Image (cartoon, rainbow, N blue to C red):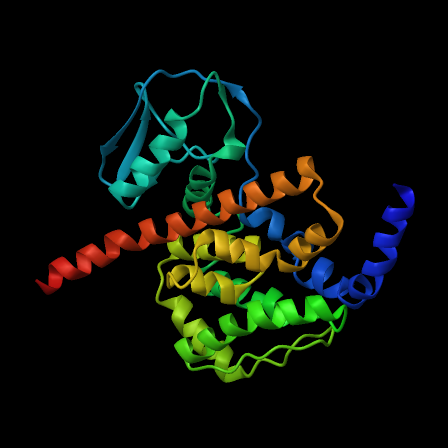
Length: 289
């Protein structure tokens, strides 16, 4: 058992050393200044104190009612969302709680709280630029030089996504085996800034959350454009890890949990963005009609 473990460590070492900075410093949001303040940390579990969950429309949007209590944000603001469908999705999260309320399972509620309270007091431009930083350290732009099987896997799986993004947005992205990653042209950054600016602030909160889960702006754009499914995007984001699992085996209690959590958070972010842009799309269509 131990000999196999040390063998695994030895085989992985060249890849890990080469991408240590990229993986743990550049691409991990935990190392980003202020990252911990951008999204609320879910509160501790507590006993369920309500029977029924309903929604109602108020002056500022749609509200969530827990029996006769209005749901509030961590800063005690009235919990109000811009669309009825988003309100229904959040209400479903609360209604799905059993005897114990588990806030860490309610990703939509957390995203809404962050959008409403804006704990780090960031502007729309600051959110866009924070999201854009991931383009410079995008997961699928970083390539290994060995082992050959992983090199080929990355080429076969990631290159088509980069090619799609370059064609879809008329940009140049590329990839690199350098620890510094590829050199992204300013024109490419400007196009993505313009594209992200087309979303409202609520949707941008979801997009940034999605990007931090996948460690990839490109994969996130693929999700938003419905070019990728959540399952496919998560698999592509975890490609190197999945390769090692296939080679050395799966630690069920750890790898499976991480996979399901990542899918859950990414799916919630994707749904959040679509529900936050839905009302604006409908209103624009009604005005045109």
